[in-house]
Length: 328
Ligand code: COA
Figure 1 (spheres, rainbow, N blue to C red):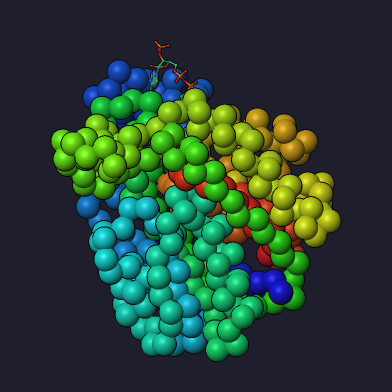
Figure 2 (cartoon, rainbow, N blue to C red):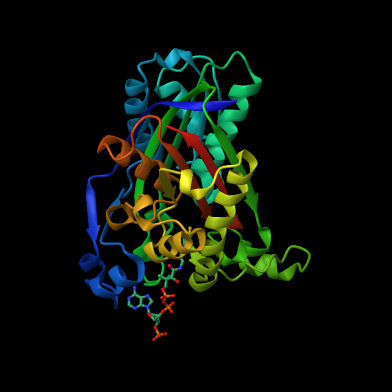
């Protein structure tokens, strides 16, 4: 069983931060950021609630889908920057959107979160006849966990949200989800843990004790090496299941981390760059929101049209990776 994307919507916070803005307080410059990452600007949420960004995107997706919120039976929100430890943003949206009877939960698969959530939703749709429509929302304010003194990391990220309404369909579909936890220390932000107490008790010393709390840390070079392999691996694993090749894909919609990652992965796949949707120049890396933001933009500007075959490919902290191949 496949899925149909019935409607989509997105939301970007108003404030835009350019590379020159970073140069105002960091030892960096527009040329370095553009040539090493492909990023020119990104949106910044400030303290705008992540659930509200998600709600704004979801309202548009539901309107485009032309359904009533009461017909939605499942809400999944992917985020690594929830406003709350608990409850889930999905529960908040379920109420805020007027969805009456739906399972609702958040899913954290970092930047692979949209791909994970879409595939999870498809599995619910396949196995539960009571669920007619599923709402998947990816909402992120990564700027909130950025260390704005770390010039090699903070310049990469932006904030935003996007949502899809999905229904069951006979359309072509394949997916692949995976994770390599041996790379957990290569990209992480930790919750509160008093370092001195963790270190006193060697049984609990997880090796993260001295790292700053609630700040994103990465080994950029290692993550880069992982990403350029993960992208083709995730695509091929899903493609092989249904006997499709990269030549038959109309559009790749990859996680928007760094244009050099996308270019290298395209080469590894033997696919031309002009088949890759790239929006990171003006979105930056918005974690799990990056794939649906790129997808929605390409749909809205007419680049992606109905009937085309799409490959959505994500990778991120975990280290998680995965892909979904579907027909729009
Ligand atoms: N402005 C200017 N100089 C900078 C800089 C910045 N914003 N950030 C780093 N530099 C400097 C470094 O300090 C280093 O200086 P040195 O040679 O004097 O030591 C130099 O630029 C080269 O740094 P390097 O780390 O080799 O650059 P890079 O080409 O590997 O690019 C990343 C760094 C972070 C852009 C790149 O590794 C990357 O994109 N990694 C993947 C990160 C990612 O996508 N994370 C999220 C995944 S979901």
